[in-house]
Amino acid sequence: MSDSCAAPDQDTALPESVDLAKETVLTGTVVTDEGELVQGAYVRLLDGTGEFTAEVVTGEGGRFRFFAAPGKWTLRALSRYGDATGEIEAARGLNETKLAVSR
Amino acid sequence: MAREDVLVTADWAEENLDTPGVVFVEVDEDTSAYDSGHIKGAVKIDWKDDLQDPIRRDFVNQEQFSQLLSERGIANDDTVVLYGGNNNWFAAYAYWYFKLYGHQDVKLLDGGRKKWELDAREVVTEVPKREATTYVAGPLDWSLRAKRDEAEAAIGSKNLIDVRSPDEYAGRLLAPAHLPQEQSQRAGHIPTALSVPWSKAANEDGTFKSEAELRELYVDEAGLDESKATIAYCRIGERSSHTWFALRELLGYEDVKNYDGSWTEYGSLVGVPIALGDEPGTK
Image 1: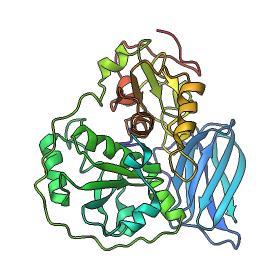
Image 2 (image 1 turned 180 degrees about the vertical axis):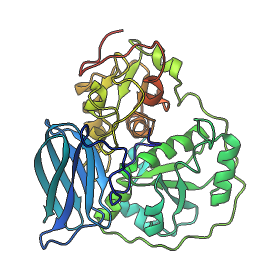
Image 3 (image 1 turned 135 degrees about the vertical axis):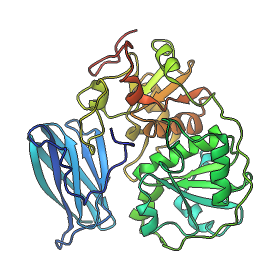
């Protein structure tokens, strides 16, 4: 059990205890429209009905990661460089997405 | 209670960074955010190391809380402005705590660290030096905190508000979606609990919604019975502090408790009733 419900450091490697045969991991990076990685972007995971599910903050690598379930999800990024929205149809294992923020 | 008595805006904060008697406190579980940059003059409180008992699953007692605030240089008559990451969850948890131990003048920075960063407002790495004080905490106010028996007894008689995500409520997920899902406790929710995810009380930038929007959310949409007492819970009690704040401090309901044992306790109890699926269920 994790001590709190806070999001862990998003730059760390996937913990070895995570079984990708069972988990559905949505991961990726936030970039500016020039392709620069964005640190400190707030990335939200919204479920199939648009309801908020979780939020993390990107680290130096501009990376985010969610543990979810197979199905339709929306990713929403807010940053001081602008915002971005992405739709994803997730399957078991790793699901990679890039979010390009703009004003 | 008026909104301005319990919430300050980022603009107000910026204008009062050097006001005597106003202490800014950043509260987080991961204090590396504080170390990399914080609001000028803010001291830090570590949610885990400073606010939790190191051995038992409980929070620090009256003496430990007095000692903590004395060390941080916070006086009983200071105006304490709390803020933090994760949409102010930990700051709201600390706010609840300051109220539990009787601090009079405590406020949340609306939007917390998130709005401050999105606005690109100034942060510094310099750690302030504050003279130690002799803080005296009051006895724990049990009118604000629910324990497990009270949560179970509330089934069908009080408002129970489950503030986790809809998938956690229904039992499809056991933890927030940014955490791995292996857990020991059972999935689901306390029967008759209404599902109102904490996030519905906040705007996208982390600020609280207006009182009119909040009332519509809890009363008109979710069906909160205004004539009854309310207990809020989540997984371990921080997200529900956020909702406790919205219900008691912004909407002004008097009898609102936070059940900090929350799902990691309730879902591990032997023999208690559990409801699965999207409906509240019956007693």
